[in-house]
Length: 599
Image 1 (cartoon, helix red, strand yellow):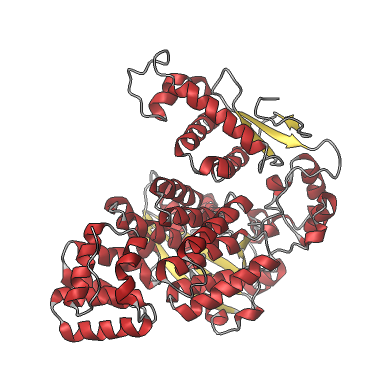
Image 2 (cartoon, rainbow, N blue to C red):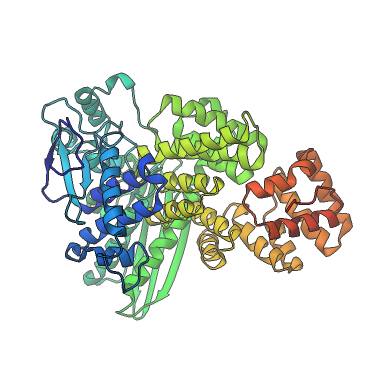
């Protein structure tokens, strides 16, 4: 056993090969822990050696390569003179010991770095006795809960005793949950899985008549399934089940009912010469209606066929998937008219997305209260915690329904985001929430670190793309920021209006006020006072006093004390002093008397 194992540990290691996904999940869990979250340098060190080991390059893990790739040393680095790798290696081992002696004690996978080497060791921790739980955390909602309707209980027994919860969390059913609760002592917690939407993706029909071209439609549907499982909010039927319906002529509604899903995606593919045409339809099984359909046409060569498959898959995912796709809109159109007191945890999460689109104090209050109740009923639902982190931030950054002072509510947001990551270290929304929490704490290195982790976990979540892009543009990281925002807008034609804020900011900062006004008109939210703030300063810069006065009147109606808080709120959003000065100039010209920013 390596030196990172705490004394008195009852687990026994299994050093047989561990799937890379499990190792990376444990790595993300470590990096989000209290022991590592404040040390970017140690986090980079650990991530580098783990990824090099997984890539089969562990033979290159020497002091020189680590110094040049992690710590920025140049080619003249001499480990006999510069001891940084040796010192940081010792700190890293000590930090891992602290982690596995505390919150990571019961994790099913353990990462250690033995003394005398920088090559990490991956171990799967097994209990010595039946009933001794290998992992303390209660199960998170399975991403593909319908994958194993057959043989589920047998798989759970084996997995529960040999690997632990984290390894088989994607294979949940009601009976499986009960089996684990009984064996691990979690039954008293009455944990239940939030009920989100479910979908089956049928193999796309080959219309060419050539059986050798079946691969494209099957590959397309399989890739869509794989990408949909990145969204923790949706349950996806396995391709091993849906492949049985590849040649079926049955009514898709009957197939959907047989698979017990709320939505079914079906389509066709035709390869003819250098053209590929794909059609797709999304069906609401309960309503027996097609709620979305689209056709995609591309020119192809033998060399780019897989690139085309990737491109079409990405388009379909953005069109249908949460957060702002057709499934989200189909559900939100109903729940936004309902009483949030009747919502389960999943619908509270969806309502919080709706609240972020509207940005009104009234809707924010309902969303926050709904989520606070949700985490009481479902304390292990990661998405509820990450959404609640966002609602707390709206108190801090927008002054919505403030209950506590700014430092307390900012800390509550950070704690909720941390909890989301702890519960689900494979959740892009959780890492996004943690990155945003660091942004508002002014910890920009950590913001970018966790933002990139969120993007790597799900590069197709439009809300995450636009949110991270917006914050990068606020930090004047324009190339990367606008690239993310433009991707979100391009692939999500029906998107929340706040997606366009970075485009307005770019035009305003460049003093192209006519273009800024055009961008602002696209993103007006009547109940969100900041919409009127940015519109007022734009009208002020253009000298349009009639419209400027209308905007100022609306600001004062929605936020009467805004003139006294404006500069502080701009700083809270981490705009630069130069940008704040330009904002204040526009507001003065619009007739809003606020204090000049202090130096």
